[in-house]
Length: 146
Image 1 (spheres, rainbow, N blue to C red):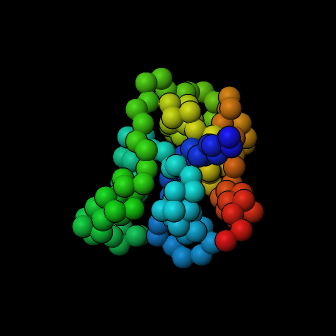
Image 2: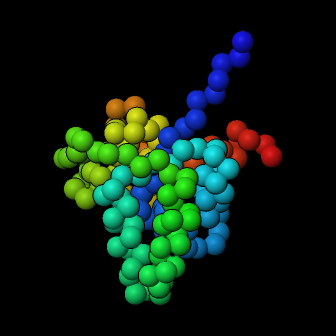
């Protein structure tokens, strides 16, 4: 009998989520990967709250309806929402980045995909690897020659 391939759980930092959802280019390929269930994206209420807040920035010119469509159409149907019971603190130079480590630990995630320097500098926390966006895209491009 063949071994069932484990689906990778991934936490995406807010900058990566914004780039994937709002901008064209290679990073937007992440959306197709999660829509095709190539990995399980994971999010906590703190990350979701930050994402909603950033989407409301005037520079993005999004209406409340457009923000709702992004959250209910692009995020919630695909993402596993986890409850963080034990926050991870004091690891990143930027204390605000602890929410991504906390989410990854709570979800038993495999990867955090970050564009944030203070997160990338950590490189690994427990069994969670912290990688760049292009590393994630390369990982799935090389493993699925479609």
